[in-house]
Amino acid sequence: MKKRIVIFASGSGTNTQNIIEHFQQTGNAEVSLVLSNRSNAGVLQKAEQLNINALYFSKEEFVSDKVLEKLKEIDPDLIVLAGFLLKFPNNILHQFRNKVINIHPALLPKYGGKGMYGSFVHEAVLKNKETETGITIHYVNENYDEGAVIFQEKVKLSPNETTETIAQKVHQLEYEWFPKVIEKILNNG
Image 1 (spheres, rainbow, N blue to C red):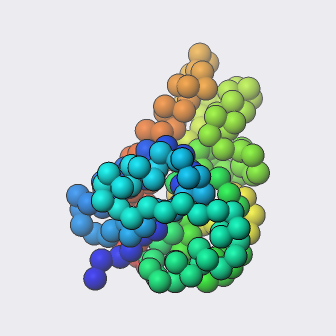
Image 2 (cartoon, rainbow, N blue to C red):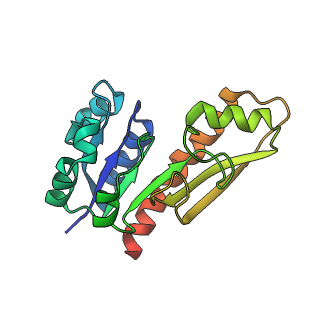
C-alpha cells in the first residue's frame, strides 16, 4: 500500500504542487489531502487541478478536534507543512508524534520563530549582510521552528542580492530537496 501524505499550506502552493507532481511521477507515495487555513489560498485550486482532495478549515476547527478527526480518518504516514503559517496545535502533534515536518526558508536556528516566514526571512538575511542562506527541513514541535533538524542545504549569496533574488535561490532549493527528503523519511519510517 502506498504511503500517505497530508499537506498543510497557506499560500499559492508552489511547493505543494511540486511535491504532488513528484509523487505522481515516482508512485512511491501519494498526497491524500491538502488542507489550508485560507479559503482563497491558491494551493486549494492547484491541488484540485492535480486531482487531489483539498479542504479549507477555520482556526476554530484547527484547534478543536475537527481537523484531528479528519487526519485520523486518513492516518497519514507523514504530515507536511509547506508554507503553512499557523502554529500547529498540540492535539495533532501528540497524535502524530514525529510525523509532522516543516520547511523553513533559512538555516535554522537563524531567522526562525513567530513572524519569520517568506519575505520577512529574506529581508532579515539581506539586512544582516549574510553570505549564505538556505533551507531547513525539521520536525514540528510545540514551538515555532525549534523541532529537530532533518536536513539543511545552503546557497551562497553575493553582495548585490535583493530579497527577490534571495527568494528565488531559496525556492530552487525547496523545489529540489523537499520531495527528496520527504521520500527519504517515508522510506526510512
